[in-house]
Length: 200
Image: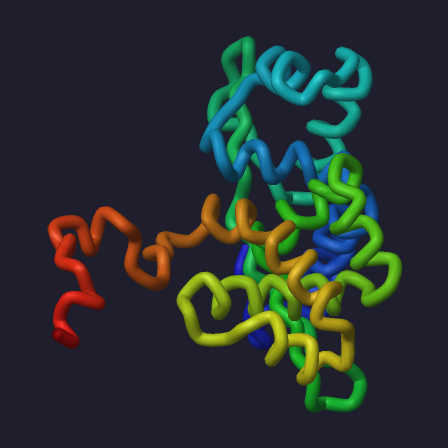
């Protein structure tokens, strides 16, 4: 559902409103994120895996189909549904700040109902703040930034930075192929000489 400026304004606005529903309602985001991870699921599977009542599951699926963020893969029963890719960039009124809404952000928002750290971070810094924290988490996992740098640049405490970085780590690893930074014990196995013995 990547949209560019050559689209009619009504289509772009509808896309934004559809994605806004996902960001405002963590349960809808949770269903969407599940479909992104699993690639395809029936309503029965969604009910079972997400612990949803039948009526609720059908309501959520219908809302997401109507919003255009998921679609049925077949007309046969039981219908299977897939998530459509979302990549929507919004520029703030100042013309400087830009935010990109992706499945990764939607997945993080979906975890708000089950993770108090994400919920608290969104309450304090908003969805835009969470999107920024996700960017820092990716950079941290690549070994490019530290929690202290994030804290200084965002004017938050180092503890708050470390908490959200640790909390978002599983989200990032589910969506990005990131190699672990640093060496492990297995990497240096075989280096067993006594370092202090070299001085003699």
